[in-house]
Image (cartoon, rainbow, N blue to C red; front, side, top):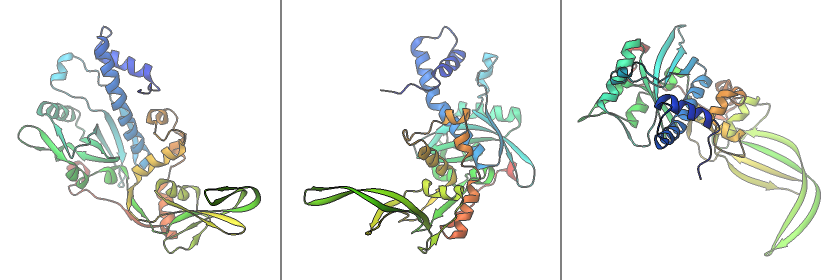
Length: 327
């Protein structure tokens, strides 16, 4: 059974505005479903852009066009965004947001031409935000190449020319093997002992008396800031326990190092905050961004972890082809 969207009324109203108030019920239902899939994707990318730190403004574009004939020439993209540059200038772009699980994204010629026409009309570059397998890339529409009929872009080429780091401030980092968090709990009182299938299980009343971290050299690290500690909530850590006569120590350790984009970490951190429902309700975070704001300055936390030896690499990835508007 499909869960009712939290803002169903808004989706219905927007669908009626697009189709007209006399729309057939089936067409209306189909449009509501399409918006319910598409709008959260736009919201997610908007929040990611704002959170990464260089986006001064991002907002949806009203796609209700008039006169009706304009739809034959222009396709209004999803978002308009303004980014601050290191040199003090500002870059404003149009963004069309897409989800495509295939290795190649394909645009029909008329759709491609109408997007380009709108971009040329306003004089703003047009970028495509593409989500695939939880990874976002942001690429110029000029990277699409015409095949037999359609304009195509492979995910490999999209990642090679990804502007999310260069323009929005995304980055990648790697957690050191042995990096982890350790929680020490003192045995205060034995409550009961249960024997089952030849094993003895003890139920203890425990009191946490110490929390510490370890780096790649298995050295203890203390006094990490709150934002630096969040790196452990963004990673898949292996759990184990050590038992002594007086304590139980719970270990959550990185056993295999790999790289993670900061924008992917945001999704994991918001999922962690919403423990009862691991899904991220992006539209809700647009209305109330307290949880997102609590993860601000994430890069500073990663840099703090790097000094402590918990993170061993930070990558600022540059595009293979820098678009003319970025030069």
